[in-house]
Each structure stands twice: as structure tokens, then as C-alpha cells.
Length: 251
Image (cartoon, rainbow, N blue to C red):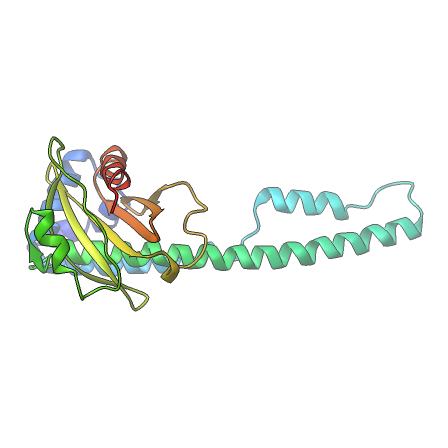
């Protein structure tokens, strides 16, 4: 019964619609309450499934309008011309349907990746042991991954920045191993995931770099054959700044 008041506001919290002070209080509670954290993870997964399903194979209003204009009957045209236009319109619809199906599949895969990463981030926040290697030293965290993942990466220097490295752990996305790093900034935690680019579905870079994932902000970019994802409830500016530190770090 202690958590009933928190759980009553859970959906509002996940949609990012609580007042800023309530959001901070809820963040702190979720980190300390395994029951609420488990409920949050379950609802995130449900919302993701509904969100992905709702976006598949849905033509845009502009596409509908153009198709209606193309197939609309025009006055004072002979039957043969109308027949030719009908054939052309049918061909356009077929091509459009195939294109829409392909784009819908691409969006579905991309949204699934974002959904899985959001779930991994929430699960980490709810875990009593969020990282496997606990260290703020990048020269300690990076070597820990050697032999555990099939690639290497570099970590940025955080001196003179507001970020702190909390540690790292292994992560799996579609059965592909990668690195999961956790950073802290002003009581917020940001997860940075790193995977091989070739192991990820196409189309991840076709959207704007900054993406909204439920109540989280996410940025993704490709560098040196690796695909990076930064996700958390920190501000878009903070996530962009952390991404910038990675982007200016060379192997």
C-alpha cells in the first residue's frame, strides 16, 4: 500500500507530464523501489509495443491527398485517356504501397532498437548493481571490456566537464554484444551504448540525431565503424554535450 500513490502517477511519469519537482522525486523513488521499477519497466515495454504497432503501414495525410488527386475523375477527357490515367494511378499506388511497406519495416526495426535500449536503460536504473565494473577512471573501465566484445573503443576525457563516469557493463542488442557505459550529471544518469555498426539495422541514421524515447532523450551517431546511442532523462543539451565529447575522441 505504501507505493499506491506512486503507482497511480506512473503513466504520467513515463509520459514526462509531471511537474519538474515531482519528476525528480519520482526518479529518486524508482531508483530505490524495486516494485515500482519493475512496474515502470513493464509499462515502458507495453507502451513501446503499442507505439511500434501503431506506426506500421500508415500512409501520411499528404500521401493520401496526392493519391486522391491522381485518381480523381477529370472532366472532358476521353475514355482512353481516363483508362491510361487509371493504369498510371494503379502503378503509382503499387509502387507507393511497396515503398510504404519497406519504410514501415525500416521504421519498425529502428523503433524496436530504440525500445530495447530504453528498456535496458530503465533496467539498469532499477538494478541493485547497475554496473559490472565500478570506476570513474576511463583507463580502468575500457580495458575491462577487452576479450568480452569483438571491438575496441575509446572514452572521452571528462576533465573540466560536469560529467562523471560511473562504470560499465556488457549489453546485448539483438543477441549482439556491446558496451554499456553509465555517466552521471546533476543527479541524472545517462547510458551510452556502443555496438558494431554492421550489426545494426539500416536507417538508424536517417532520422535527426536527437530522438525522443518516451520520457527519455536519445542521440545516436556512427563513428569509426561503431554505432553509439546516448539515452537518459537528462536534458537534450546535456546528452548532446556528452555525445560531443565522444565525437571528438579518436582511437
